[in-house]
Image (cartoon, rainbow, N blue to C red; front, side, top):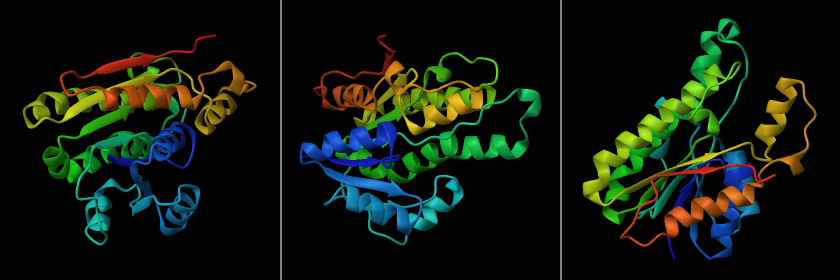
Length: 229
């Protein structure tokens, strides 16, 4: 049985990953932004433990973690949480940039930094659930894509730095997936949303589990998951 730290387990891909690991009897540590959210996650995943820390305030994560128990081993750190705000570069304010970069890039970097000593001892696996926007930027997607391009760079650098410690690093690039975030994107685009048209979160979760279940003699560095319809 492994120990897994997951962000974004409240919905979408994160919830699907947590559910699959929970079904296998794995030990879950779920990150929650506040105590109320932590209680909701423990109710949804009985037996799971929670860490409280707001990804929107990455500079506060170290302080938050110093006041609560942490796992003594980590087999995988799964970065799934994210936020999106569409709009033309000419319309995006510094506030939007700061909020997006905080959750999508700075928080994963800081969370990884804080847990890296335990990951090294455990020879754990770090998975970044990125986006197709982390490979190609389109009009109106500049802020989000910039955060995801940065996340790609973070993963690539981390992989090179930690290979000697036995820490594996994988980036998963899902296409449009049927999640609450996708519903928000469609609303911002002014389009009707049909979840049946897009990838099921469980399909992306299977890709994540394939990466972390791979035997130690190999490493999946990057995997792109596209809609099959």
